[in-house]
Length: 109
Ligand SMILES: [Zn+2]
Image (cartoon, rainbow, N blue to C red; front, side, top):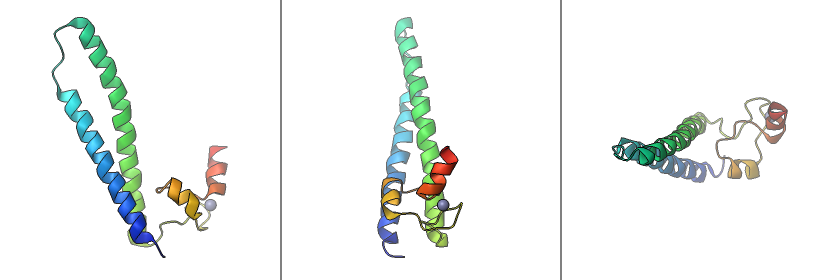
């Protein structure tokens, strides 16, 4: 399959970026709370927002790892539902897509 090296590079770059993001979030959360109570409330709200971002990033990391595993196995770009080749434009937009546009549509509906 042509272009898998480029796909792998892109997935690995994304993995590195997400890993760095998670690390930054964890660092931010390790910072001690401010003595000021109102500041603490803001910090806690920030923490909750960061938790959401961190969870999403960790989920993305898992998906990207799966995509890399599929690259290794030679099944990358194949729809897990119907086995058809996933359109390149779709993989460009969603490098870790596991379903072709038709099956993704069915799953959403
Ligand atoms: Zn499909």
